[in-house]
Structure formats: C-alpha cells, structure tokens
Image (cartoon, rainbow, N blue to C red; front, side, top):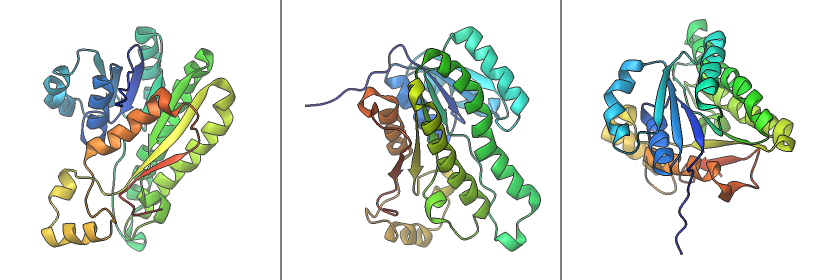
Length: 250
C-alpha cells in the first residue's frame, strides 16, 4: 500500500528556499500541494530557479529578506500574513558556514554564523508563532545538523549554532504543544551539494567510509523527511530530532 502525502490548502514558509536543501524542500512541498513562500537574501539566485519552480506549481511567492535582521523579518512576516492570511508550516532552513579552527576564528566569523543560523531562526519563529498561536495550529521544522550533535574540527561556530537550533526546537515544542503547534528538527549528515561536489575524490571516499550506509545523501532525502514532519503522519511527534545521516550518529 502506498501513502501519498497531501498538503493542499496549507501555506508553508521556507527560509533559504531557493538553493541547496532549501530548494529541494520548496519543490517537495509544492509537489505535495502546498503553497510555498520562499524567503531568501539572494533575489538573483531565486530568479535563476524561478522557472524551474514554476514547472511544479504556480502556487509560490518570494520575499527578499536578511534572516538575521530582526526588524526586516518582522515586517516581512506582517506583509506575508496580510497577503496569505495564514502560515501553517515554517521551515527554518537558512544557514551559512564560515569554517576555521577556534583559535584562529575571527569574532566576525563566529557572530555571522550564529546570527544567520540561530538568531535568524529565533527572529522569524517568534513572529510566525504569534499567528500560529491564534490559529491554534502549526508545524515548525528546523534544519539542524549531525555536527550539532557530535561537533566537528574547524566548525565550532557552525556546531554551536546547530546545537542551539536543537535546544530551541525542544523549548518551542514544550511551550506551544498545548496550542496545537508541533516543533521538530531534522539533522542531516553529509549531503550532496555544490560544495561537496568540489571535494577531491579521496576526501569523498573518506566521508563515505565514515557513514554506515556508505553514501552521501541527496538533498531530496532531507526534503522528504521535512515533508513527513509537515504531514498528519507525524501528528504525535514534537520536540524530536529526526536524524537523516546514513547512520553517522545513532
């Protein structure tokens, strides 16, 4: 028996939704029938994938906003609500990396990663939650990382931001379960992206050997996990971290 997940009538917001994992999430949600609102700082990047998205569905919109700008995000959410009337699903996906050993890491690189990955999630979630509380319903799915669970050399800022996302997700889940709002995190392992494609073959092989399933995930595999958490199939799941890492961390 096959199960088809339908999100018709739902409005989903995806931050960083015009590239990488975020683009895959946007596409998967559109395919499931949701209306998808993409927030991204790079409007030029969105223009390069707009036609690609349109082939799936015309039920999408785009807002250019810097996720780490609290005032701008508040304004953007207000405009969205006035136009859409509701937000059923929020996917916190926007994120950056600025790697370096801790002793050499600049204050700027530390703060930039925390500002985008963690503070950005706080700013938009706080604003969207107000409307979900009124509706007594909502799904919040935040993209963490296996690095937030196990740490990694040269990624102290990234690991701290992703661990923070997990802790913030659990706190949201506890605070708003009684209001019908579910909050969960997805923690990917190594994903095939433009960055991983550029790695030397020997590095890719070393990565694969560290993964019990012996493969690097496709972005769609993360998007499908998000889709599950958006659906009624996950109606009794909140405050959880769904590890999609091929067995890297158990």
